Length: 232
Image 1 (cartoon, rainbow, N blue to C red):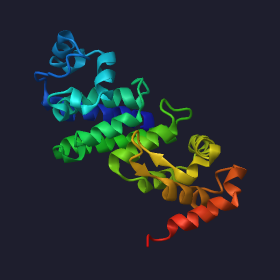
Image 2 (image 1 turned 90 degrees about the vertical axis):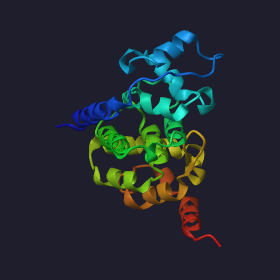
Image 3 (image 1 turned 180 degrees about the horizontal axis):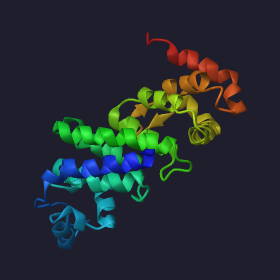
Image 4 (image 1 turned 45 degrees about the vertical axis):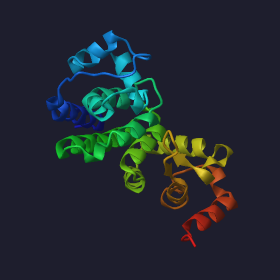
């Protein structure tokens, strides 16, 4: 089974795990949403339009009377649109909203199904270039959602393929523009400080695969040494 097929399987499993959530009466901000929107959101998940799903996915939690329940209900639709590049909003917002919805505290089958999607999405991204969602955005979403960067970097190190190396070149070009890598945060609200982990990874684990002379700048290694020192 290819990585893209594994991702589709994980998305189908996500649908199955969340099927028991079922519709409920949705209420919220009447300035932003009409009674027709509330009725649609209160109906069968499959009948909610993609544009409405995207809108709800982006809105702040205070737009809804029961935001955690609504977001949990919509997760299968939101995540499928997200990983296939069809959400049409800032991907990093989704991680922030999931954290606010408390996804890691959901019933184990729900949380595990979502974790399986993160893993499958990352593998599919690393094996597909170009990918539906740029590699930096994908990495940012799963890093912020799981509050962990290193495991995903380790997977990238172990994935020594032309697609993974093409993504690596894209990432290096992205984060070395104006040397953003010296102060790099991930997440829509800059929740995760990725500087030390990502810089260390680029300068050590994959330096032989990252063909970019900008990574030879001496001050990057000085910055790495500073970031590696324990706080006083």
